[in-house]
Image (cartoon, rainbow, N blue to C red):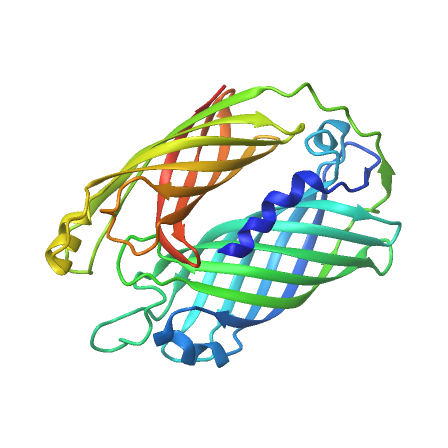
Length: 354
């Protein structure tokens, strides 16, 4: 999960050029990745010697107008993909996933581009944890899991229609805390992508738009979902409220402080198992960075628990938000709570920003 921190460096990086006309240019993509599993859990170290193989097919598009350029003073590629992963171990099985991504271009020359891609999606896992038949796979215990990806790309234009790219990716897969165990899987990947664009790609350097004066932004969101301790245990709710007061650093980024109060329905079961006093309602405070690309809102928070009765050994946690503005000032999306490289839970959210 720490690799996701790189996403928030985007506001401080500038890139270059954008297509001439306003029509969307579509491309067809095919990729091949080799990966390595990374985990800090002692019981999962045997899996770190594996080299999973991933095959991916996708469709991407670029809006070429000035208004799209103005989102970040850079060219942005968006896309979606279908992916198949072979983990090279019968205990882990295979993964089939569908995802969407956004990819700002940070640097551009006539035949070269450097970009940073961030994406999210859903993955279907063919082999999951089972206390009797598959006890060693504690990465995920539910067939339907969530996928987050982040990584840089270097692209070379072979001719007006064909492009070859070298990609690096950090991928995180987990069941969103809906069921334990949920250690989550982190994959460090490298691969090649071949992309075909039917229309000619001609790029134009737009003038950078000046940023507005610094201002204060308030973001409040409510989140909630459900989770299970074991497949046979009842589903319980998890949810809460989160508020951030941020000062803009530029046209697309802001830095601020805030707080949160969340309820976890699993607390009573953890109390019974451990015998410890664990709070049902947990308060915290955080520092946050927000990145706005058009209608997309990315937010990362580093939070400190304000009570010792959390049921976790860590005193801090991270919260990530990915949301889309469905009307001015209103957002809907997902949020992830994590402790370093282990996800705690995903939840759905509704946010108000002004």
